[in-house]
Image 1 (cartoon, rainbow, N blue to C red):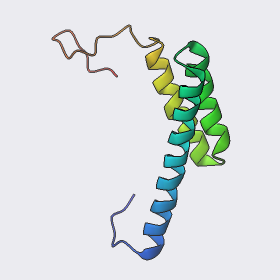
Image 2 (image 1 turned 30 degrees about the vertical axis):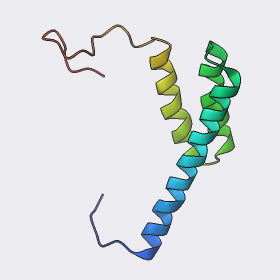
Image 3 (image 1 turned 180 degrees about the vertical axis):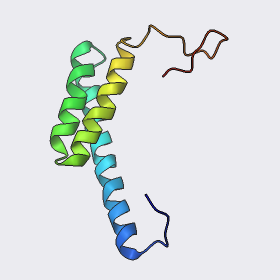
Length: 91
């Protein structure tokens, strides 16, 4: 990782990544609203969003959306996220 002066090429690449993320998020939200709030929507929306966007970007969208789905299903409810004195700083 390095820090440098922005160029037209790097800004164009960043804009492309932003657009792909925006498209993936739109597909995710459309699938979620179409399928409802049940477990089917929670599982199918990330899969659909990741399959529409191809390549590494689709994989990242599926991974992040899947992690969010796992949280909404309560799979990570074992730890306390309230920041109390017993919290060990886990996500």
